[in-house]
Image (cartoon, rainbow, N blue to C red; front, side):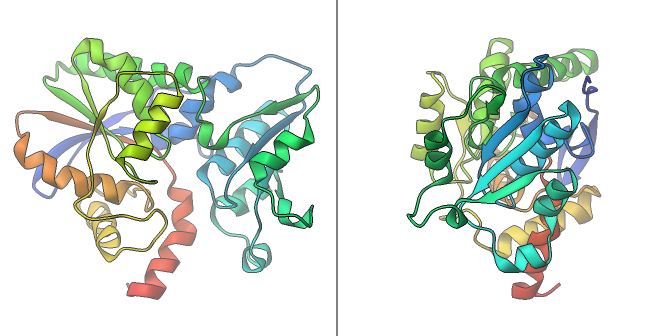
Length: 299
């Protein structure tokens, strides 16, 4: 299976024009930055592999992407989590729901041992044998570079065909893997990559960059106020709703609002730049996030 090149559309937000790379349209389930990072696995031709192993949160975007990948390849996904809340078991929603529909096995390690243990440590102690393929949390691995390099190639093709000048590419970061490898493959062409830390601060993000063995990093923008990952902020919800209203495009609620808050300060000082924003998918997670925001802040 080959993933098709995703389109670029033009929009206006807050009075500023920008281009949008629709990586959320790669595949109905296998889309966005996780699909880019896992693309190398999509091309593996090894009949000995029977199981895909990962870990994270029961609502992680990576759970859905790994489940979709396993379905496409005919593998069984075992995805380890700390625990699965009873309410989620009783009423599956979002990434968890669709991953189960795709055949994923989501395993709570808290039910497997009396001693507290992190899912990563449990997997390491399990000593996976032949036929098992392990993927680090969020796809933070050198295997991600192949797919992200393809994304960079598509961006360069678009820049050249449309003759767009002074291009800056923007996308939010969790582990920063996509932003880092995009920067690596675009810097020689004079294209700056902008990102912001959504999990932890700038120091944490730089540490993630360093652990991937690179020494030249994308430009890191920081939020005007402290931001805790997963916490519900009214300004994030308002930004998300404004993006939907002004662009007609649904964005992710966990990452995108923070990046756009950072860009709202960057854009007025960089009017000579052409902004290309990468939509990294993740909107299925909104199935659970939107009700949480509505309960707290109303419509």
